[in-house]
Length: 122
Image 1 (cartoon, rainbow, N blue to C red):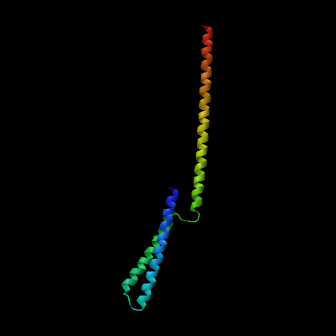
Image 2: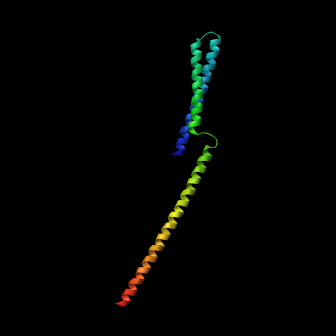
Image 3: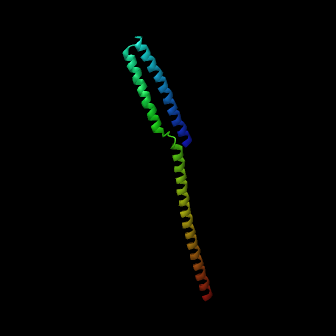
C-alpha cells in the first residue's frame, strides 16, 4: 500500500514536471512569435499564465507527495520506531500473562492443598 502511494506521488511529480516543460516550450514559442508579430498579445499572456500555473502545480505536487530525498528514510525510521513500540507492548502483555498464570497456578495449588487437608480430616 505504501509503495503504491509512493509510486502515485512520484508519477504525479513526473507528470507535473513534463507539463511544465511543455508549457515552457509553448511560452517561449509564443514570445518568439509575438516579437515577429505573428500572434496576439493575449495569446502570449495566456501562455505565460499557463506556464505559471504549471510551476505552481509542480511545487504543489512535490510538497504534497513528500518527495524529498529524506522522506523514505523518515518513513523507514517511523516504521522502525513503531516496530519497537509494538515489541515493547508485546513484552508487557507477555509479562502480564505470566503473572496471571503464576497467580492462577498458586491459587490452584492452594485450593488443592486445602482440599487434601479437608479430605484427611474426614
